[in-house]
Length: 112
Length: 406
Image (cartoon, rainbow over all chains, first blue to last red; front, side):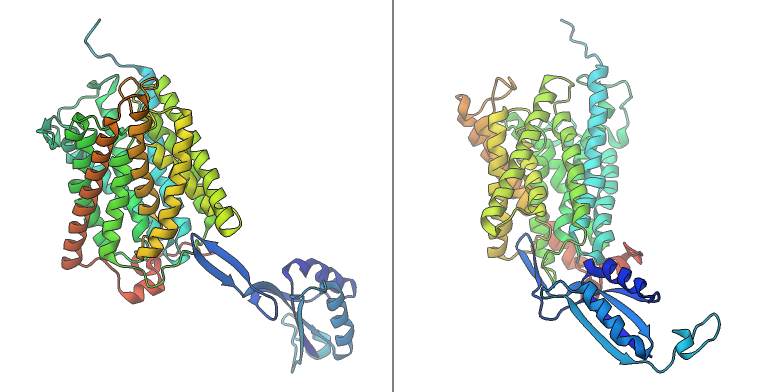
């Protein structure tokens, strides 16, 4: 089982969610984060107090998938989230030791 | 022609409404305007400064404030305290065409607002106990004398100084008092402006605009043409100033800012305040445009050059536009609008001199006495909170409350 973390644009969340649900990937959790990569910051100014806000609001989508689904799910996310401009985000994939469903106690692939 | 004063229910109804509108300028007007501009960790304390100042000054007003401000004058310096705790004033007593009690109420809201406005300069670092002591001393020693001199039958009024709704008594007063206080209080560790909720400030500015029409219109003390004229020129000056600030922003930083727009709006209203019942529409436009120029310069250049921490620009906006408005009232006062006054443009250049005198006296008295009061409080009980409190935020430390538990 693998954990897929996708840091995407806030505006792309709906597209990514719909695309994942379409391929049967119903389970996910979302958080609102701020981050930066190569994207330039935003300037704000209040009565001469100037700020460069270089931590930009993004959305973090976390999915747990079976090993054999990793490539398909990643591609679906990429296709839905990509705009071609700097700031589209990144996907991070890492192994997971165990998954347990709280209600039933199922473990492993049955719980994904 | 009968010499007996008669109650006008029209005038009374309007001044009741106007009083409530001026109260609205303090709460929610100033409270929300300042609260939104402050940092999130200080939002409650910022609003509390307005609430507590209003409450304390209201009580001072009805115990001894009104009497010293508007009692029969002792050599033009101060009023004779004849009606302490409002004793001897019945609901039937009249002041012109409105009940005396109503006049007291109306003036109460002015006094309380002036004190509340000072709070914008001190946000984020002042001890609440010191603020309370300052307000009590300031109201007694700064507001009451200036109010008496300009409105209460004192020497500046007798010299013919024109101040329709409070250019000197309110705006120069709070602006210069604020400046004196923050020079003693000192700058915040982090003195950049980062409004935590600019939408709240816009709401506050809207309430200020709304209430200001009672502030200026009610100062006519009658419900008729003069009040109408005052309201008309107030709206005109406010709008001209808003547009001008947006233009200056567009030239200077490349785009109009919303904070600039509401600041311009307020600057225009400040400047028209002393002139509202004396000038016509063309003059109001000029006054509005000028107010934004003056206050923009004060907020961006003077403050940066001299380095004082007038956190929310009380001196820059109220002080400087108040000075500008009070002086140009001597130029634009038109006998066609108000037969009681005429300025330089109408053949009375001496009025400018009188306005300069009233302006200078207000500046010196407000700044000087406030500075002394601030110094005394600083030496005895201290003005500032501890550094760790300032860094962590005043709301949790001074009130054990948070503005937002979303």
